[in-house]
Image (cartoon, one colour):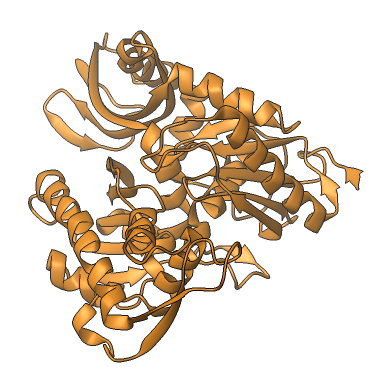
Length: 414
């Protein structure tokens, strides 16, 4: 395989580290700014706890190496660096505020940069690595809800800032894992932010939407309104917990339990044909005389239902606290768990919401098979595209321009 220089060859690469799989995506940016996914490589994730913690760096490094190798082999070249998404449970969300006094001068970029930097100081001193600092709103004296204060006059300027952070030790451990795969880290990105980039359209971000990502080890809630992320919460339960329940109850392998859940599982146990019979191979069949347990669809879904109810009881509780007025009433479902049969009707009934859709990654040329389980990897590629365009590594005529908030992000990061 040949080697490429990402920026010169207009190539971007991403590695999403999840609890069930590691996914590596490689894409090329066209002259017009469109993104064409060249390859996606996946490998089973080892060394990550179901809730998102790191438990075995050697095993995780092996998983990353295999996923990267699979993607490189399909693309036909090696990648020198990649954008990395952390396991969802390793990020924290904070909303902080800061204000500064103005001296009868119009507000300039330097004033905003200083204000944003001051708002991040406390967390930076608490052994936290700041992944993203997203301005939610500015206030000038008594005037609230200002989006762009530049050029305005006033006495006091305040900012409300949403920070996504992780422990510095996590960054060091992830860096060590990725380095063993001979890939440099271009940037570490918070998983929820990447997921939102690939699943939400601009109107949804403006009008108010909650993204529910049903991952393998976690379920994440991401709120957007007025174009900015307002909250990010992670519940340490996900699709892998349902798979484990099936495997334990019927003494079958995790691989077969996942297959059964995908093929025969339903969010509504009462809505399926309970008499259909399924043969469930038992653990150890390869080592002894084959043993098969016969179960019905109803029995399988009686295992799925309680765990799903538990997950969405937490979801409902978090939403009642984070969005008490229902301003973010639209629901976008994504992640591997979103593919469970009947999820839209189940969520509508459980959460009492009407506007619900299952999102697949959008905005890619020539690709129609990116499912909801690849939302984070696709969002990483979009983040990489925007980040490199903002920093001037290549010029595009369309497709890389972001909102004013994205330009502010570029301002303080520079």
